[in-house]
Image 1 (spheres, rainbow, N blue to C red):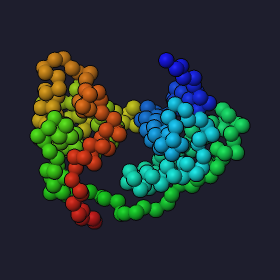
Image 2: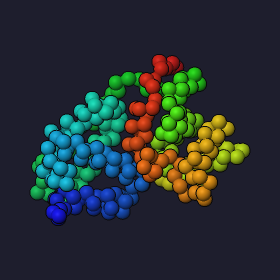
Image 3: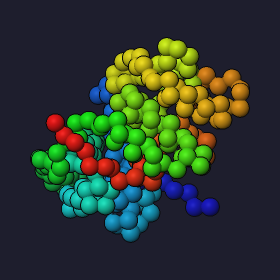
Amino acid sequence: MKAYQPTDLGRPIVRFFQEYLPTLRGMSRHTIRSYRDGMVLFLRFATTDCGRPIESLAIADITADRVGRFLASLESERRNSIATRNTRLAALHTFTRFLIAETPEHMATLQQVLGIPFKRGARVAPIEYLETTEVEALLAGIDRKTPAGRRDYAMFSLMFNTGARVQEVVDLRVRDVRLEPPHQVRFTGKGNKVRLCPIWPRTAQLLKELIKKQTNGEDSADQHIFLNGRGAPMTRFGVDTSSKNALPPAPKLRRP
C-alpha cells in the first residue's frame, strides 16, 4: 500500500484549524466550522480544476485565477448569494495570510489571492418575512412519506418557527428540547451564548415523533436530533442539500 506523505499544503491546513484559529485567533467553533466548510468547497473545486486527487494539492495550486473561478462557481453553480460568496472569500483570505507567514517563499503568488476584492451589491432584494400561507406552501411541498421527508419537515418547521441559524439547529440534542408545556428549545449560538426559544405545540409534536422513531425509547439525551441517512448528525452541507431536494420553489413573497 502506498504511503502518502503530507504535502506542503496538508501540514499548514492542520495547523490552521487545530492551532491558529482556535488558539491564536480565539475564534468560536461556529466560525471555525464556517471556515472549514469554505475550505472543503475550495479543495473540492481545486481538485477538479487541477485534475489531480485532493491529497496531491499543493500551495502552488492556490492561485488568484483559481480562486476567482471558484468564487464564480459558487454563484453560478451553487446559486450562492453575494454574502455567502464573500464569506467564503474571507475564509480564504485568512488562510492565505496564515500561509504567507508560514511559507514566505510563496508570498508573491498568495498576495494576488489577497488582492481579490469582496463583491458589493445583491442580485435580489432580501426577503424580510414569510406570511403564514407562504410557510405552509413551502412545507406542503415536502414528501413526508419517507424517513428523510419526515425529518426535513420537522427540521424546516423548527427553523420557520424559531428563526434559528442552521448550525444551531443541527447542533441540537435531545436534551435541548422540552416537549411538554411550556414547549421550548435551548440553542447555543455564537460565542457559546445560550438562549431559550418557545416553540409551537405542533412543532414540539413533530420533534417528539422524530425523536421517538430514532431512539426506540432508549435513553438518548446526548443524541443529535437531526441525523442523515447514515445515522450521523446532519451538517450544514446536508441541510443545504435537503433544502434543494425537499423544498419546492419559493412562492412569490410579499415585501413591505
